[in-house]
Length: 385
Image 1: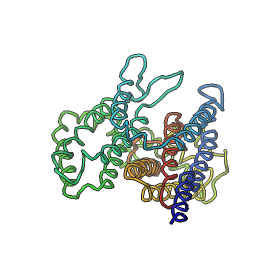
Image 2: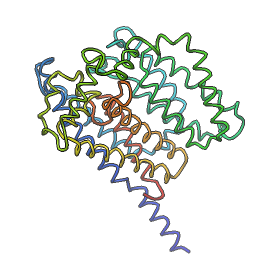
Image 3: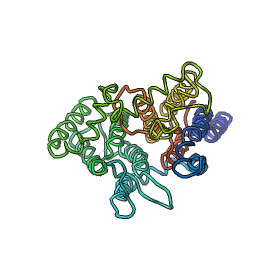
Image 4: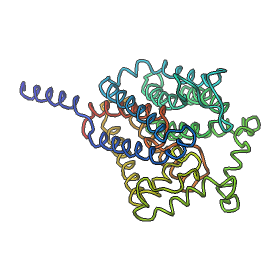
């Protein structure tokens, strides 16, 4: 009996020090490819704008360094501590969105006010809100006081009420892409939390009803002129090739030029100021042009691997709180990757969503790597990987 007990203790210690290496390797591969592609895609525009071809990749490299340090720290910090502060994290997720409204701190670009200047760098507070809401909902859904399988009125109304301030602030910022991602991730987390289908149906119906009631007051924000232009460009790209669909068509030209093996790393022609923001939302088009179908297949394989490993960690997490965080982080990365690639290939209208780990953006990269650290931490106590 003593031998069995000792064996269990040894296994417990062993599990607590084991992280999911396939996930870690996958993320590091995506990160390395992303830095190389940011260098390649941003060199012409950085030279034209700043007089330094390496300006953007240096910023991205610094963000990657900070993000890796954060990932290491979060992989060692017990994730259960987050459960104690999930309410505070929710409040912080709201407050951080207010920073874009502060004069002199927040600023507007292309009709959207979603960035702030901080320590000489641009930051997008909504990236912090995304992971903050995942932690909050994981804590909320596992709190014994908030059981989703009991009275619907005790859970459905609070869930809608808790999302309302986030939705209003994102609407003010004209940041519908973040709203779409947050909504999808929240829906997935609610489903995975064990919410009964009848409760979920009522929740979904209530959300749709609220949106329909509010639509007359917010239709100008939702269906602004630039969104109408994006829908028109998506439906009729050829007819709008010189203005509304210019970026989309240039991206499709880049993808078509890549062929099977691509034109070669660094040899893209479309990055020479033909594709606006080639190193941001449309970096997948440059990757397709330079690395071809093979390079695209590799990226898709890596994201699929990340989704599978994240799901395995979620299923085998030692508690429901860790399971919900794991599924939330996995869903966040996967949803953003799917939507970005769908936009670049003109499968859906342009939404302004970046490609995780590959697109240029310091805030997003740091937060994503920190989130992976939490996921790795959960994998330490997983029952089986």
